Picture 1 (cartoon, rainbow, N blue to C red):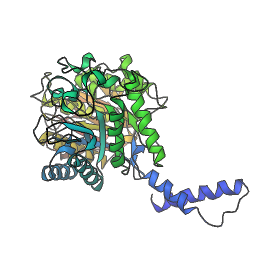
Picture 2: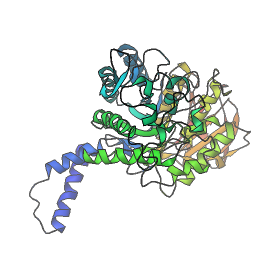
Picture 3: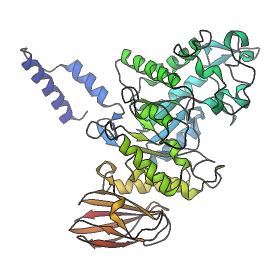
Picture 4: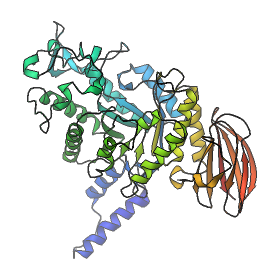
Length: 476
């Protein structure tokens, strides 16, 4: 907390004491210290809860990484990735607690015995050393971590066969005791895996659930010490809502016991974010402190923008940060998305009022490659002129616009931002006054030219080059 904020807090304590008829000869240092520590944690911004605040200041979370579980990386590659991310303006990573050995360097959280089986009552120190190191290094760089506790792909198809929770691989329970099968060959979206139905409010699997709870408590023993962690229950689940609700409640209870607060959410699988499935988080601000609509990034063009605007409007009565931790789009993407789709989606969400945007890992996204680095640099250049939280979507100000050509946001009469997907020209309704246009080339992340613009009537705005371009228009 800054000195001004500290003084304001202490002053409010004294006013409360005087109203209660008590003396206020000195501040309450322990209480003030606890409040200062709480304010330093990532949380919805008090002044505008559609955005985040961290260490008492509002922040726009932007990022990109080359993997979804970077905590598993060995030391030097991880350090290099985090340093690169910070150097281009990134402050946001996704971290699934995934342990599937698909890259070859991943380790499981449980101890492996000499016979090759695992003991779910004992830990693999290396897994937890990596996690602690990851939390420490991201904290040192002020990089916010969004953890996903469970990933359904870890427990299905080929990943289930060697997994420690598969009874043939552990010394703790049998197939009969656990209600597990030797194989789950279907896509996890079929929800055939009972691993995700164990909680007391579901099937109350008293054999397996204690090991799951023990794993989460071990995770929290590391993460609750840090204030830069957000918690998402699952990766794109379509399972029973009670599963995620249980873990969200459990995490919040554990946090309260430690005297801290945390922000939690769930991530649903439906690409249509207007689907009923997503309202399980949208409609429950009492439990879910933010929403993640990453699956909107399977949509393109106008539909992608309209969905984003719809979510923002839907949450208007109980505003919360809207995160998108997975921005799909790369030429190698199996869904037919392109590099340009990835860049477009990233920028539409920023202008639509989202609290975060992160490029998904290759091959489904641009990761932390050259194109995503350029977008991160460009976004921070935009922020040097106008803060994202001062803007509101303003498509109605654009005239003579073709489909998916340009998107706009404004701080009315003070600032306007127009994003062009591939060059072009539009007419922009400007309030009266004199303005300066600063161009940013999103393809390079560098400044373009500047020019003057007169307001009071629709003004012609043409890009200086083709490709992704950004105009930041500030009243003089």
